[in-house]
Length: 73
Image 1 (cartoon, rainbow, N blue to C red):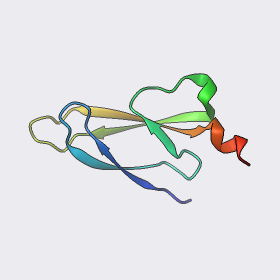
Image 2 (image 1 turned 180 degrees about the horizontal axis):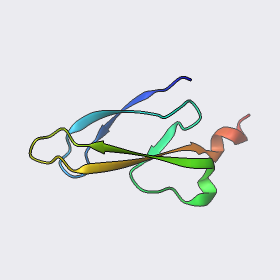
Image 3 (image 1 turned 180 degrees about the vertical axis):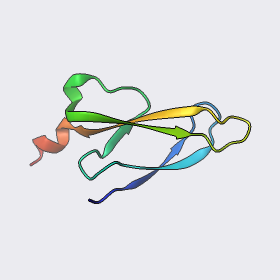
């Protein structure tokens, strides 16, 4: 199983952090739950805690397989 790392920004304080995709299929991500007709299969929800000591808020990342990926195959 190959995972990829992405660099994201905390939506509350702009602190930079790294997140890993759950697997190769779930390559797209969002901080808001994606609408049903843009992804294939299921959405994997992962939570991250901001590492900024002044923020420390919980960030939810939604990982999904975008439908446009399957349209290219």
